[in-house]
Length: 455
Image (cartoon, rainbow, N blue to C red; front, side, top):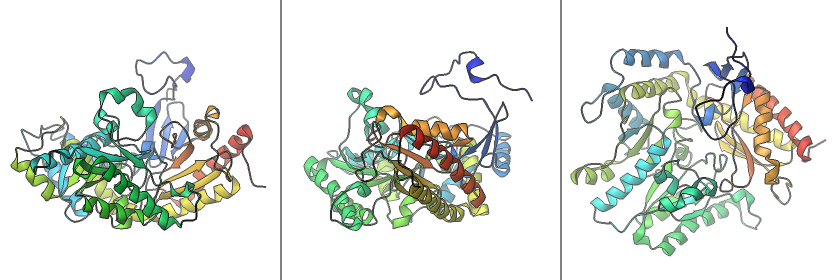
């Protein structure tokens, strides 16, 4: 097999992404592993950006895609219906909370969340409530990179440059109750954080507020943040009280990753609209979806239809991939495996936190887990940003053949974390391998940055 030249020896790329950092060329991937053209093997400990839920190169999914490729790879939704889209919508609706049975397919997470917001707005206009347009979001949070999705994203680092070009929406604090130093119980804190939504609604004017968007289990902006249990029913109650739509962004937490099909299912918290992507296509094809009840969709249909759409909406090849992904989740029992392996992963991460006290919090559900690092575990003083602790940890893990994920958690400008979210096919032995590498990387990081280590 030909080997690729070392990154520094390769000619300058015509591609540009986030930075000028060059990475090795990918050769192949299978299961939880990825190989580069120079022969290195990596464990995909984050499923890419929490995408490859069923693992890489699943033969049944590839075969299903090949069968569809032999028939038709594209059919525009205004000209034709297609069987994969129809069947995927039917099967997806059966896995969602009762009533969320009207599906609109898109190509990714940003499209999905923006579609949810646009559906909500058109519904309000259609029922004679055009004064409702504000979508309250949490800070920090992440809901996508398009201008519409970015407007409801609580992340200064991503949004500041584009703020003059969009309508920035009101925010409430994300429920980081573990940080609070007060005499309240966690359940009381959860209620307090939820009540901040009501305060914001009243401050903005209830008749101007359209929706509240949240991730039931946090994504990259909060490193798998989970609110106290009391938070979720109170949020639902407040939205109902003021006639506000509750939008769940399940782009990262959905499609089985947390041990239930939706993250919100852990609390029986039913949204009015839900956004899905990432694990729905599991990296095999660009795919996302909006799900809503008929009571929201019917007024749009009666007033002329949903004034929204994308070229690849309901693409037959992408939907064939999504169908096969759902089939493999069921055949292999991957949602149940995510729950069981998630408990093991969480226990192992908590073990690392005892060994490395600068890990101040370990959190998450199922195979969507995160850990936050601080300089002082007693005061929660953050590590100096100039030390770039998160990136250094990610690099140390990468050097050892493990891919994990992380970014700043305080609006994208402060706070250090890492996320571990391997494919749902993960085994106990493979979790052990991941934890061993993270432990080695943390040991080096602690020595470089003079962070506390036990014994």
